[in-house]
Length: 200
Image (cartoon, rainbow, N blue to C red; front, side, top):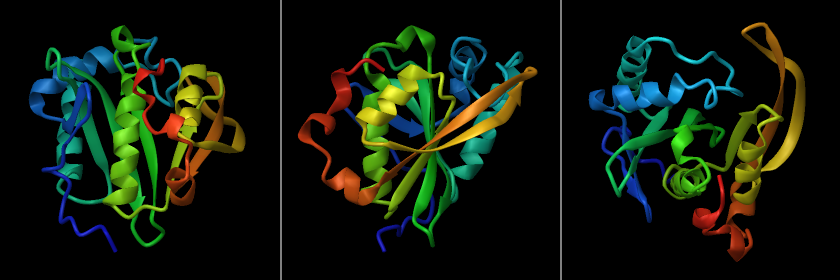
């Protein structure tokens, strides 16, 4: 079994343009900027945040989670200016079943530069190669075309469609369920192994 980590709190990954590292209290303003923007939260299963105290609480929760091995939340720090521009998570990690959910968010001003594809590629590699996962799942709003394209470029396949699963601000929304398994990740075409220049 590959997962021999006692906790996630010291994990970090550097990619070409990003540092994936644990959230910290100084990220509150940046996290609030992401999650308070209705454009970034348009297809989430919860409303846009309206108070920075919610960001501070989320960071405290993430810090606590990172002391264990069931929920991993990275802040995405852009190396060029050291700004935290997004988050990427593996959560509800089920070690016996070797599976996890994946989630992510990105500052609107950073959209269209391939940052999320770059971050998720690194996070998925961590999940499969270090944490011994066999399966990673994503649940997205089917109307979120950029998110869907990002997942599909990484090799995820749509496996289910759940009608009227969420009600956010009185709007009823469907869910598309995507899955990626280790054997598919290991044999993916070379073109999908480095999605850093893709638009996502």
